[in-house]
Length: 57
Length: 359
Ligand SMILES: Cc1ncc(COP(=O)(O)O)c(C=O)c1O
Image (cartoon, rainbow over all chains, first blue to last red; front, side):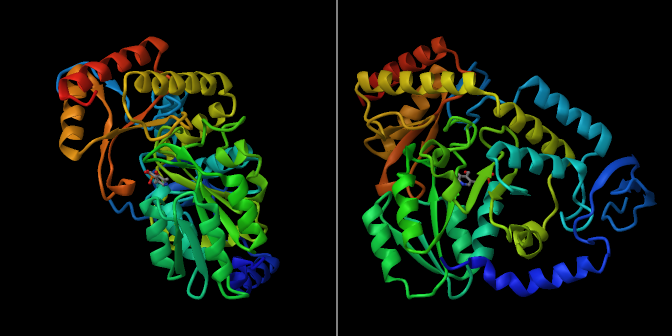
């Protein structure tokens, strides 16, 4: 069977290498809970200020 | 209430009646309080909340599959998966009666598109055999076709697709929650779910909210989260929506009694309408959609209006959405309709049909 995913193999490899270097995956962060509109606890329950949203107001 | 009149809704796709389930509503309210009204971001940036992960976990359990990816609508799920997986140089073989979102996904991905006659296994096989050796092939099918409410012979079609080296995508939008022993759809019912590479579904029918998804066992599936444009370049679903979807999906895992009642309703309505002399889209009830064929658009519209005056809402469907230029009154049943209501509906059809001169 032809694997339609094979076109993504280079990207899959690049991503695997990036994650293997030990960095946190920048594209799969989970917002676990909110204490007020612009701070949040992401994975690992650190509390942090939340700058990059588009809730400008 | 419609136009100030108490109205039975028989055209909503709310098959399992989850929209007013108290647990579902409570989950949505709680998520609004805890997470706010929206995510204001893409899934790959700030738009993945605990609830998005939770609903993907629920889907993986529901289907017993390794991967689940949630989209903002079912339309986007088809658009995204099809256009990403089958690109230039690949071939998509699909049923001619496929949903608009499937056709649009084909167009967006720029693959060669090869349609075949509705549910025709021989025609599908012929098309597959003509595809050049070594080219990527995707067969796209639906479990239930929503215009006539008929199901696909998935068992044979998937066997033929696999024999010819194709991957298979099945859109189970109108069967999820209802068809199959666990409500996983027509592929489960016909014992071929393990051979399906991608199942597409929606939250806008049995699940009772809004959203779409794809589940898969393919080991490379997770890369789709980064390369699928209708997933990346749009805001994720609001927290209240994923919370309601998650609760609803978990309840649908244990909804055997509701499924049985919905089948009873479908069978009763199908038989009742046939006995009254209406022409229906299928010989036997195959899903929770019963399509009543109208002689022409004028009488179809008159019948639709007469039913509304009786206190019944159904969908009026006409070309180009319908196959073979048909005008249809599409009835979609709900597990919350009582047996008495189904009898009332048959009476309403009879009176309206006689008024308009269809029976
Ligand atoms: C077969 C099929 N696929 C996909 C969709 C799209 O679903 P959604 O309403 O979630 O966009 C529909 C809805 O009409 C459908 O009937």
